[in-house]
Length: 376
Ligand code: ACO
Image (cartoon, rainbow, N blue to C red; front, side, top):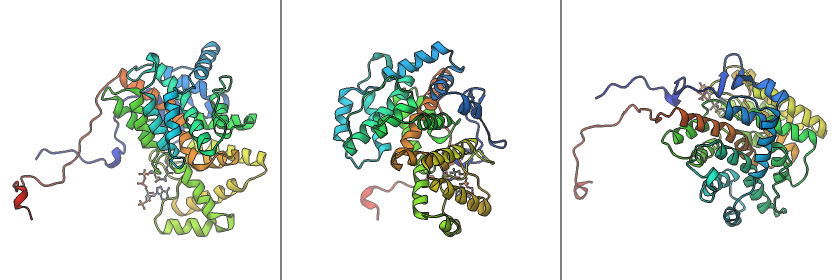
């Protein structure tokens, strides 16, 4: 039989391609988008600037930024056929399933400029602009809230909050959401981005690639962890119960969501920034319940397993204080990561090589074929 090199389970440490978009230094705890440190971007830029940076490889000038904001505002509406499909979806459906299904359906009705197969930034902008609308339209239908208007004057962060909450976000809320969107916008070859690039590497279209990515992000070991963190906090209930519950999980070898990372061996810099925002939003709301629980959970997990928090630990505590239901946390993640997915898909189209690894076959060979009537 043909000799196969050592298996790298989970493709760990396998370098699959070259990319200019994102760099993670897992030992130093650094994250870089197109040359810029995430801490600078979170402190000083906006999600719109970051999306532009990911797609074009440079920060926008003032007029380029204005143009992009105008385009986002103009690209927020859904075709009526897609709205009709949303009317038919069960109210109890998972919002990630709704997002995946609706992005796939959207591809059927797009005008020429953004239609599937167009390997253009137009498609990337359209998908980034419209994901909050899909979430808002579904959420408003299931809660019986008024229909959504595109509100082109709002930033993506403020629009996302408005779409879900059906109220104007405060300046602080919009800023916190903007920072969260910046922090989630890209992360090198994470599982969902890899899925998008695999799809694109077959020369399939942008919408198919993003549909693959949404399905991949949904899993609890990836984007789905943020929702599970809030389930854990609800189960714990009070700081006095953290030791007992978290210790019990670790003894049973259960995973504590929001901790550990394939690449970071130190604290995820996104967790550091979100921890601070969790405290700030908690103080503004006069409610530090989640923040204090999470600090204690961190202490126990680090002491017992040496694990650090990842980006998913603190995001839910911020969103919950805004009044966002937990099943929208991962779709919010997708509304940001779509900028990174599409940047990677466009990069893949520029330097295309079919992604097709090899498996080590551990099954049998040369079995004699037995006709069906003779099988026992
Ligand atoms: N809770 C408890 N134990 C953990 C955790 C955790 N969150 N993460 C890792 N470990 C333990 C594993 O049980 C394993 O222990 P063992 O050697 O005694 O069996 C050891 O640490 C190594 O874990 P691996 O699964 O080999 O590490 P890997 O790099 O494959 O996993 C992952 C990374 C999947 C993120 C993991 O840390 C995990 O499951 N975390 C919880 C889910 C989560 O928060 N996901 C979000 C990640 S960030 C993102 O995708 C946006």
